Image (cartoon, rainbow, N blue to C red; front, side, top):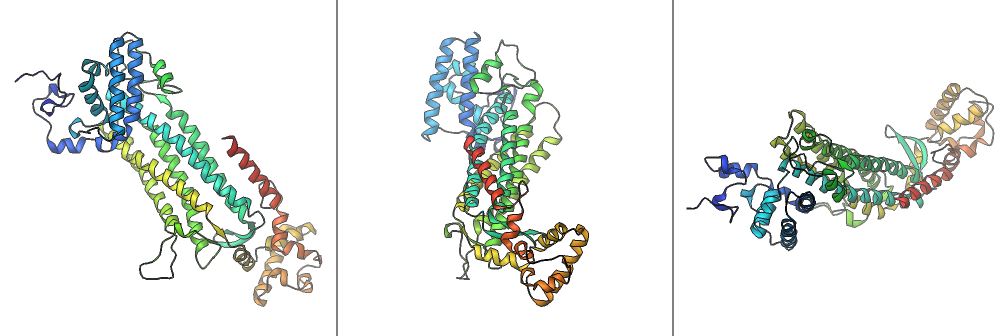
Length: 471
């Protein structure tokens, strides 16, 4: 039997690196070490990186122009096969890189074998993941903007809708529903800033670092970086192939973003409950009960809340994966992809469905206003009123506490107490006090920058609209 493997890279099921070894890899080890079942989603980035690498090799005279033409022809056929679902992914070839290289070699012969000149799977996979993640970052940035846009649109219709603001889940002060929603817009806006910032660090090229020490071939890494749209190259070959802090940073961003999603989801669940009754979610985002026919369960919001734990878990897993690795590349890094892929998928799906769900919210202003009246939400306004009459704030605070106690005993709101009763707490109180004791009077008085006064809220809305329009 001939030992020539040039015609069939899969002859005797040997791996691309197996010439040194005296026995074949066991079937169990093949299954245990293979990543092609999940890393095949990197195929487009792998081909894009390979084509840029081949063009550079040809420009530098490392491979012939005919080799480059053959590689391009073979890769075009592979793209067609993968897109049509005809490409055969083979477990014995371990990963996306060797599967594509083996098919290319079968199609174009020696030119396919020359493609790997001046690179290693170590810098190849780091490049592929960065290329793929960069594209996903751009998609998620758009979804984040859509999430903010949905909240801003809902807020714009409710600048005058009064609801209770809470601290410690106790009624604190009146705020507008729009103001409450815009708090989440601010959170997601900061998420967007984090995402844009980490994109710059992700967008650096590892290719050309080879296995760990660089290469002796006269390559042009900057040319490859330009061809692939990278902002620059990784400056140290050891670091380029071994670190995954860009994946850690993305997953950290995603965990923070999903915490923000979870907080909003929790409030939607509370607001929809009969105990609050502030909103209704559209039926298409709810489910029923198998036993209780009256139930409308906010399952989408609950799942969004639950999936935040999944993403936070991926962050912890990736940090743990990296913490004990010496330089340079280690096989441990194969385990970076599944949590990263799932984080991207979970975040993207969650942002998309949450934005749609927010767009279908039906608000119940009367229920919100009734709730705001139940907790003496204008007590601070009465204290501020007394301060304006010359009373020190601490004395005003104590005076209002006594007034609230009497109101509770009589089952009245502060605004319902007779003027004579209020004057019994402080003689400076006059008829004009009732203007500040109403919910809307309280709202209108909060004119400080970023406050809940309708004019301030409208200014926030316009600021966010302009920012989102500018991209």
